[in-house]
Amino acid sequence: MATKTPQKAEVAYDPAVALDFFKSAGKPETFAEGAKIFSESERAIPLLRKSKMYLLLKGEVELRAKKQPIGTVKPGEVFGEIAVMAHAPRSAGAVAKSECRVIALDPEEFEAALAHKPGFALMLMSMLIRRLRETIAQLSVSGALAHDEDFDEAIVFDKKQLEQLVAGLADDPPIFFRQGAQIIAKGQTGIRMYAVIEGEVAVSIDGRIVELLGPGGVFGEAALVTESARLASATAQTDCELLAIGRPAFLQLVKISPQFASTLLSALAARLRFLTTHLN
Image (cartoon, rainbow, N blue to C red; front, side, top):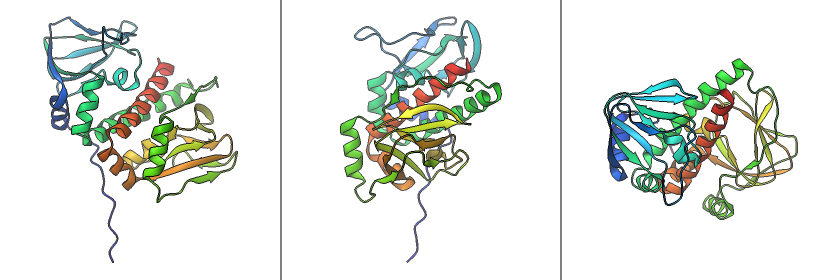
């Protein structure tokens, strides 16, 4: 009996797919030349102001950090997504260089769009992962990751979500690692991601710890999405119980569970924001 080849996700950025996603739940907005779209360090204010992510339809947008230009957004490109997905202040500001037309999504609209168009989550993950790779490469060259610091445990899935994930993957029993064991190594091909059920895992880049993960934390998803080399290594800080998720199960979860996709996007966005802060 022939073995089926696992389905590959199409992760290359496609402006048409992005447009379809934004139109499914977003609202059109227009900005005059010179208008401020959002400010650096701006944060959402409950009941008063929501963070939004944008798809640029027409015009040109300049991104600024510390009052200096850091990039330009062209039609068909997405911007402002990190603050929405990481639930964090803006890491840069955005100004309309010419009259601009956009489609905007606030967090609730983003969740609604994911429910209708789950395939966009993989494309968005790939965008974030590409930027993670670029940022890590720059940090490695600059030596900005040379010193350790204190970390809070990163929690991606809450207790209820973790229980649902374990129950949904009942055919894949948890695996165990002793304290000090290496779970994954930077440069390996990623064929699984992991969720921490019990214990603590340290994620490191070139020997420098960049994240501590307790129950509900996940790692290894970046290489799994793009079927590429691991960005970091992971070691068991204590005895650990982990749930391993292979690519077919991962793709199915993204397809049927907008909450799963949204939670992973939030984790990737938070990691990118953390590393970008070090770079800046």
